Image: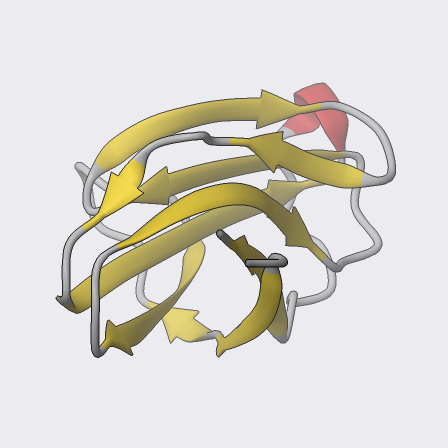
Length: 103
């Protein structure tokens, strides 16, 4: 079966002491899938991704793609993205959505 693409809309999430300025979204999956790749669409220099609170790492240049390869069970899954203008950690234009490759 070929991979399919889904999107996750992101909304601003307030910065707290234990969480940087970020954008969050959720997806509800009707069945278990393998997550192939996640792409973050924004205009910053650094992008960091968490899926269900697991840190997926940081990408430092476009395209901001994360190869995940893990399984996601049926149900709700939370995505969190922090984007900055490089080492200054200055926030940049908000990402509006993620593209997910589901296998």
